[in-house]
Amino acid sequence: MGTTDGLIRYNENINKNYKEEYYSLIRKVVLIDNDSVLFMGNNFETDSGNVKIVINQASTLKPTLPFRYNSIRFDFTAPFYEFRDKISYSYQLEGNGSKLTQWTQEHYQEYTNLKEGDYTFRVKARNVYGTESYPAQYIFTILPPWYRSVVAYVIYAISALLLIWLTARLYSYRLKRENIRLEGIITERTAEVVRQRDEIENKNTVLEYQKKEIEDSIRYARRIQSAVIPSEKDCQDLLPESFVFFRPLNIVSGDFYWIGRVESKIIFTAADCTGHGVPGAIMSMLGVAFLNEIVNEDHITEPDIILNNLRNKVIQALQQQGISGEARDGMDISIISLDETEKKLYFAGAYNPLIMIRNEEVFVTAGDKMPVGIYEKMNPFTRHEINLEKGDLFYMSSDGLEDQFGGPEGKKFKAVRFKQLLQEIHKLPMKAQKELIEKRFEEWKET
Image (cartoon, rainbow, N blue to C red; front, top):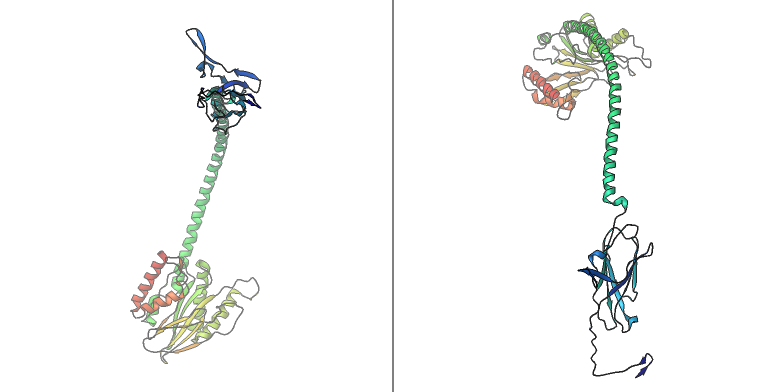
């Protein structure tokens, strides 16, 4: 039969094997960088001195390439001669993570910039009848670059060790020099410290001596203050059903109490002077001296008039003029005058109140909001009159207990808690009341 492809002869006696086996062939392997041929398509091996052609790559023909030759081209074909232009190929390069490609009619493939490692190039062909060939493969190795070779790593390790050694030697040298310098400084400063220690010891000796003298003076002042302030026995002689809880913060106290009698009237005061320690003690002694003058000598028994006179004497003694920046020394005080004949109690206060418990109910009579001393407001003090009933209890105090810090949260005792305490204990005998107040005070302070 004549066709566009030529003369075709058909013989029905000849059977065509469309599944005939065949091989793919790698025709040539070329180094792209220098156009050198690694493989020309013939694998051979030597057997007893005889050289013969084989299909598979011989172990002696598996090249090991320097890293600079890491770009390779593979040319391949298949010895199937029918419809050669219809033959397609699929290939892969094991070692760089690639998979078999899709079928293509390209008969070469290039790989550039391959990393170091072992590689196997595989290729297979498929003819026009869909029959796939046996694959062909080419094995090769690319060495790492010199800076990633074993020798390079050894050099790196040696260099690192040498650098560490040099750094250690340099550091050791600098450390020795620094130690020498520091030893000189230490020696110099040790001598200075010894000199300063001796000087401090001498000063401490002087200070201890001075401290002892001051403490001795303060203790002597306490003896004087104790002699001036009435004793608790003096109070109980005039007021048998009474107690005094007196606990100075320092050796000498800025708080004081005073009691006196003029005919049928008993005058009692509880005062809190400005400041603590020695300044407060001096003010307290002034207060006691002035009360002795006003009550015992002038026979004044009205509490408001006593406070008015006491204020005038304090202002005169301290030479207070009320000018800006002047110290406002003075005292907060509560004072009562108990008239045993008329069964009445008269009260006046400078800030400090009078607490009364009657029929188990707590009453608070507030003092005037001004101290005994110079102040913006200089009004006369107010007198409060109370008719006495059987069972009445009266309490006067400074703010020492109320301002005492302590308790679980480190807060002040405060007036509310103080009144609650008085309400709890008011039915007890006076001695027991004092003991419970003292116990509660110590517990609060030490918590």
